[in-house]
Length: 192
Image (tube, rainbow, N blue to C red; front, side):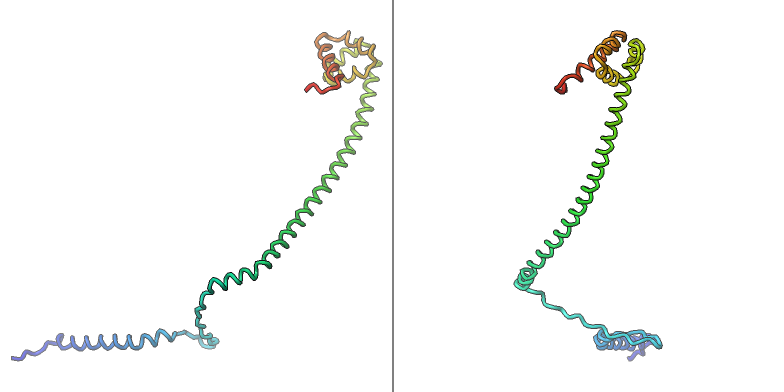
């Protein structure tokens, strides 16, 4: 007995054949397609150049590398020296500029210091003359109020007789403080 095939069974071998044919075509045409590239070209656009195939270069061996390094070593050292020399010149120029600025400031300071010393000498002489002309009791009262260092400096510049009379008129504590300052100022050696 022969049985007849159903519709689905008749289609199965055809489907299998179709799948096998597609697979065979893709394998056969796959290598050709991989080499060809599909490009989309717009109308009026220039044709793109074909990509260049990269070639593998063989790696240089160790002796070639050593030769190259030894050939450029002197040039590299010379270039390094030139760069260092330029940097040193720039640093020297910066130092020279700073030295000039420092010398200018020093000259300005010395000028100001001389003017100050002249002014203080005149002021001290004038102040000393003022206290020398005052009555001893009034001078003692005023010097007790003034800064102790300034008062001691004024008393040291006064005539010793006039200074002793003024100290005699002063309060005992103020006179003792001024006497201590004058004694330490009269020392030739720095006490510290």
